[in-house]
Image (cartoon, rainbow, N blue to C red; front, side, top):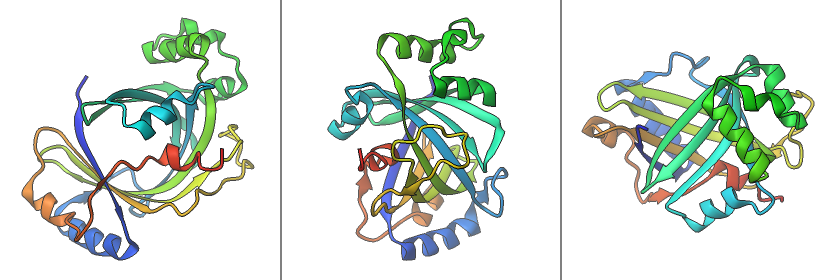
Length: 223
């Protein structure tokens, strides 16, 4: 697996305005974004002991979490993702799901997953069966993404983070989400072997330190 560097900062709205302006001068907007941004809805999984949540809060060096995700309310393109962290680096594996398959996972109808042609779907099935992973909460937010080819850099602003509380029917447009407490704006920078100086300068903030902020953990503040 190809692990990448990842760093996050909690920033103010004023920071966002300044850094966004710098990035527009040196980087490109993600071509998949609509008017420079897109909406993300994710459904995160955890077990009855909240292992994924506790490992994140405890800063466990090696951890993973599963989620199902789609963008801009478009359920024709849904992905199962497994995000892994090791020694401060991150990587992500994914597999496609149809809307019907995603709904069946939410409904607990999982037998078909054992015969899937995608190893990641079979892995989730195994962990749902033996580790009791289950859909836990919906996480909604808005993302503004920028890309920079040298170093394979991706810079994103994430904000308007909302939680589905106890609702896990994430394909249901009637599933209500509410603000996830006083969630900050998150600046995230990802890169491969090196981070170009021009990007370092563009995302520079005064008196801001790296953060271990987790949107999933933030969205669990109500339970």
